[in-house]
Length: 110
Image (cartoon, rainbow, N blue to C red):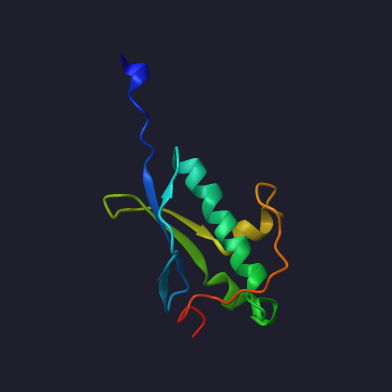
């Protein structure tokens, strides 16, 4: 009987935060566990660093202020991933790199 019941994955909401602004990632993510949420947070940070044209112009101190926050369905903060951690993890192998330039969410770099 249990095999007929579909597995329900937890929903996570991701926010980009830099001590001044907190911007919600546009999609809520269905992920199997907190480790998958951490991997997703790292990917979001890497994409952000790739698409913001002046990311490398920011000082180390400014870059260190950026984190990805992961919130569960109950609205509880379950994980904070510093951008630095994502950068140190190296390039993501789960998604191809895009050469298309995108813009940061409004208000995040102000």
